[in-house]
Image (cartoon, rainbow, N blue to C red; front, side, top):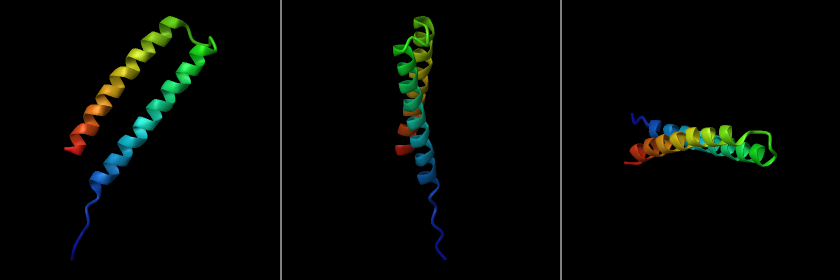
Amino acid sequence: MIIKNNFNLQKEDYLKKEKEGLDKAINKLDERFKNDAVSREKFLKQNEVFAKRQADLKKRIDNLNR
């Protein structure tokens, strides 16, 4: 009997969905900043948090693809 293991594929899908969600959050923050709904200081702080999350996510995706 052969059992297929697609654990890695599920992990990839999860990371892709996480990346899409992060991109969507960044775009939404940008729109809110353009409409003056968010102050400049808060916008810059949140961009720093998003940059850290993107760097971490990229490392996890690279580790999975090795």
